[in-house]
Image 1 (tube, helix red, strand yellow):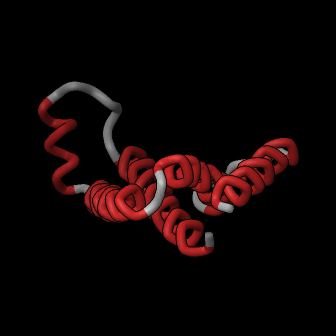
Image 2: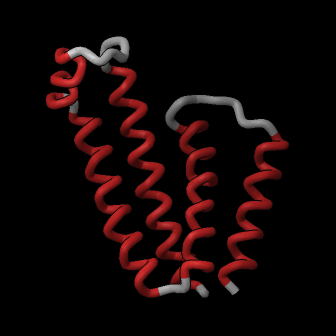
Length: 117
């Protein structure tokens, strides 16, 4: 049980890291558009590159997880990323997170623990 939880936590942290770097990258970019200039500007955006690295590493780890563990246990573990997302919202983006949202996070964690058993 602890092996899948620790691997899922690492994979979720990588997913969240990718999302955080994507948000930082988009904050540095001009207004979103389907223009050539917008898409070329991604090539010199180091946060966008780190976003891709995190997503790639998370995908490789996910391939190991679904190969090693039953899908019925592995897939719900992706929900752990919600916990990391809430923490990232507070730490990196200075967002306010209500007590009700933390109750939801606690429910997610209890659910992941029960599924992993």
